[in-house]
Amino acid sequence: MTKIVITSDLHLGITTTAELSTLVSSIAAEEPDLTVLAGDIAEGLPNFVTCLKLFAQLPGDVAILAGNHDVWARANYASQELWERHLPRAVQATGMLWLEETVWQREGVAVAGSLAWYDYSAVDATIPSYPPAVFVERKGWYNADAKYVRWPWSDQEFAAKLGDALCERLRGLEADPGVRNVLVVSHVPLVEEQMYRKPYDPRWGFSNAYFGNLTLGQRVLAMSKLRAIVSGHTHVRREGLVKRPGFPKEPAVVVSVLASDYHAPLYRVIDTTRLASNGSR
Image (cartoon, rainbow, N blue to C red; front, side):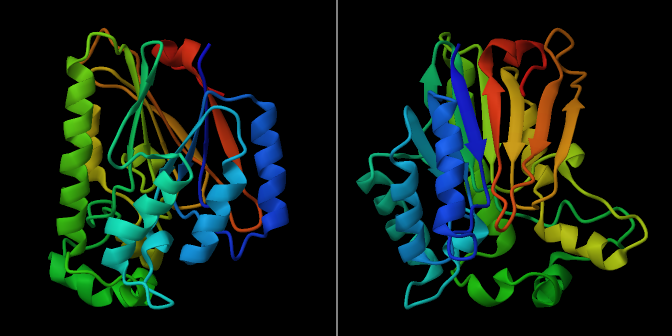
């Protein structure tokens, strides 16, 4: 059996080194073939590098995705420089996989991933149909990314950029006869079943615009070999199944969000022997 462990939202710099060391020990005991850190690794680049070193001691391969906190501009590091240079180089320097640019494969199972970014498509249906400019204008009321993420792309442009690249990698896996089952890991949730809705809380409903990318989710669900999606970002546990009428012979896709949180990091083990039958634990 190929064993895959996924964790996210570690936030070293808020979460302590001791707390993450305990997590690393627990993951090591699972003896994973692959561990994926699905974004929001740390608060600031020095903590990002320190966190990678903690996880470098794990058995098996380690793959990294950035989260929105990882690209916050601070301590003279611009968001674009972090995204394009500093984060990938830090990952590669530790011998880990920068999952934004590659895929991982073993025994017919492949893992692809992306930060994914939000494009306002996950806003609650109870919120009026605003143009994108409204979500841009009001972002600072709901999300600190408005203050700390500074780069030339709009949210929708960056979301499309990452989505196109992820789908290109997934199409490569679709065409690979050696791949039977695909697991997608993202920082930002991709499907409705991963979203946490509060129907009577309009503030929460509006803020969901910055916590999902359902546009990309529909594109990912169109991949026949997709078996599971695991995400982070919201810190709220969600689990569900997504049936796809276009693939009646394929199992429903298992979707989840890790409830990993500040000072309480969690992980999930994927049993790849059960991926083709809605299985994980």
